[in-house]
Amino acid sequence: MSGVTKHIFEHELDDILSMWNTEIKSVTPLLPRKYTKADIIALLKYYYPHEWQSVESKYKYYRTKDKYLKRRFGKSRYNMSEPELLIQRVSAFKKIFSESYKYAHWNAYSERNRVDSSVKLWEARKYKIDRINSKIEIALSKTQQVTPSFINQLIGLYERKNTTQKDKVYILLELKKYYCEKTIQFFFKLNDTELNKQLREEAFFHLQSFNFNPRLRKQRFMRIHAKTKKRKCYLREVYPNERYDIPRNPDELEYRIENSKEQKLKSYDYFISHSSKDSKEVQKLIYVENQQGKNVFCDWINDIDYLKRHLLCDATLKVLEERMKQSKALIFVQSENSLKSIWCKYELNYFLALNRPIYVVDRESIVNNLFSLSQLDDNWFVDPNYKKTALITGEEIN
Image 1 (cartoon, one colour):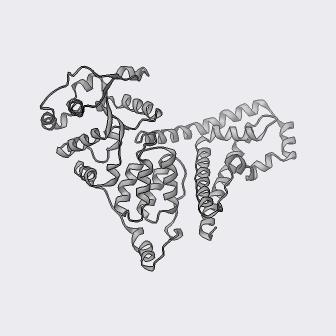
Image 2: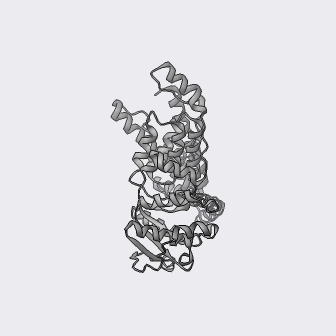
Image 3: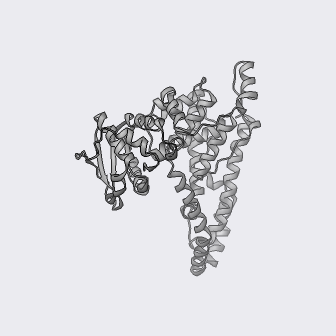
């Protein structure tokens, strides 16, 4: 293991052991009279759930790296112990499992003190846990919790040597829209190895939004692999400082759809036609479909960076039409709001012309946790002038 790589990995381990040392001290008063290793781990998972999860994520990441290294070079490098074994290296853990400590704890044990300590610690931890849960919930609301069929292709496209930093920015934007094991592990990899500062920071802050507690690697610690002097100079002096800010408008997305590979790879199981006033119910529906492995297009998740209602134009409609072409079926979330929506009427008319399945689910059914879809057989929405109507009404579309 190289000096820099070893230093960074060991720094990660030191952070974990230090964190656990503090946490174990805080849960020690909560131990029963006779306790086991499983009791310590259960307490940590209960009072520090996100911290434990962050360690599990890092373990999975380094295990994945070792599998690759062993397959490629015949030898693993990191050999990080799984959390349940790693914790035995913590000084506070060793202390409470010494015979002298267990003996003293047994004699001084008080159930009343244990209960009081539990209540006190929970009062201190509950707010922090709720705050982190809220942070993660906000981050999840901007994603789909599913692994789409094209995710490996997007990652492969990013990793090509001839992919520019500009194109990587666009690909990263698409990967951030999916919360799954593959994307999270990929963002860990970028945080660890990406030479470009903008891209590495994008990965870091994305992981932070889900509370994975990543460590942002400094530029001077980045390793450069290049066979030629010219390439090495580029990777050291030029590439790290390249930056590209995406124009956030429908015209830009229309251009990317027509000209970029990351947009052409996309496909969806369902296109959701709905009123923005029913967004809470739509979010529930998307989550349920994601659990069934379905990738769903919803404009305020998948194209929120480009499609703005106050920027309605021909490009907006062209983008939506392309998204409908990329979708196998459409789900209409029927409500008092959506029945009045010119936007929904436009989408239903266009999808009908594609001659693909259109399903309907009532908003109230979603509220009552009923998500069964039925074929839409009432063409009440048919209007030969639907495109013109959509553009004329502009800001009224919802």
